[in-house]
Image 1: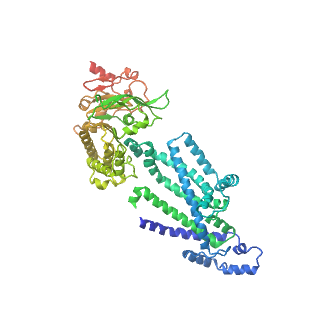
Image 2: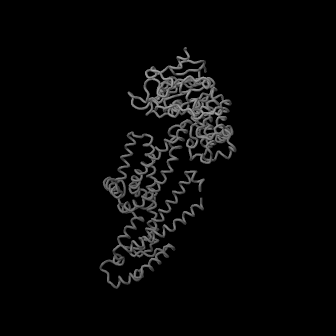
Image 3: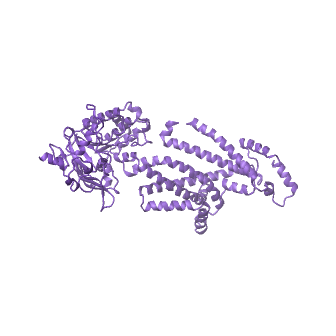
Length: 312
Length: 326
């Protein structure tokens, strides 16, 4: 198992390399001058030239690229053009917020989506099932930033139940601040997961071993949660992985709407200001996150399915 | 405790609209005594599996509608609310299914699956349950049971899985064991072992066995009596010797003639002309008439009643009933 994971980690190296290269090229192709963006349009041309020289922007592209790769290998992302702070400390400050948001929304999303899906599967074509269908449809249709804005307006602005902006300080205040952003992502996630759970459970409920479980004298609850759901989790875990990754793109919009610190927000600000070092580091963080989630899902497969365990 | 262990009277399983029901089981009646092995024979779609699943009430209702009467040890099974069925399944009736490859849960160890069958019907300490699981595995002839309880179904061959299924079915010493084509998916050598296992189980626990099969060879080997079904109805019922010696229904005769034999050399194997009409599609007369060599005008109008042909031997055929009367 450990060896297997090590191989998968080595497999990820080319991916990271491609992501880095793509970001480098993309940022150089996009119009806009980082020096101008960092210092402002009123800046003296001599100062602009000095800035470019100091940040290595005058080097030939291939040299910039090699330097960039070399720095990335050492996890040295340089200094933000904009704030002049080391990129690593910007990441260190913002990353925990994004992780917290992701974890909270995944937990809420699973806690809502899976029971709803199971319930609908056992009441096929009855009102609960139709309700889930409608709920999923809405979940697919509503964009995250829109739902975030609605929740913000209704529960924070009008009802005043939750704070409007920021991440809060301390555990309880932080929890209070994260509920609406996490709920935004969790509701969308549960719509997707609910639908997926329903399909997987329905498929498994038709299997022979479910009939065997009933023939043994197992009651429906046991049949569903012990025999059906565990098998349904196999196809479902792929969906859970996908939905965790979708949280990333979702977190960009949600962090923006709720004005929360986080990698998504950091990245958006950096892109609009052509802050190359921050963009490169931020995208790399996302790439690491995707690789990590994929690896974690592989571990989950192995834990759920003894057949995979035996094969590996 | 007089009377038969299992008594099925006028069992009907219907699907579809109420005014035009599709009866996949139509007026089936039979009985099973303790310690008796009865074969339920018929082609695919003859309603034999539906009959067996009805005894466990494992036919999903709705969409199915089940009518008639099923008495197990005198208790009216069809009259019970569905929520009382789990207490009977596994404890009073054990069931072995056709597909050993798919009938076991792939993500649970076989020890857990057999153990579950035990603990669903009685409290036991984990140690006692483990001992009982090992005892059951030994009983069904599983080599090295202590090590095997932690294995998953995919680590077993078909024959070994069918032994695990038998261990699950026998976990609570049920008085009735229903085996739905237990040997169909297995190699011939393994078939023999599984049949031997079933006879062994019957002798040890005096359980009754309802063996569903389309294999007359299996019937000849272990059954006391045979019930032949065709298109949802019982067409003949007889003690094994009587059925093989003097079958009274043209369908049974056809079935026996289509069994390959070592003693005679025939050019070609006999085959009943035509094919089985889907159960429930024939609403009047004898369902076999279209393929029957003894067909007469009456067959199209009226379903023949079961006529006696000797002790325990009954057949539903106008033609042979006349033969017997003459």
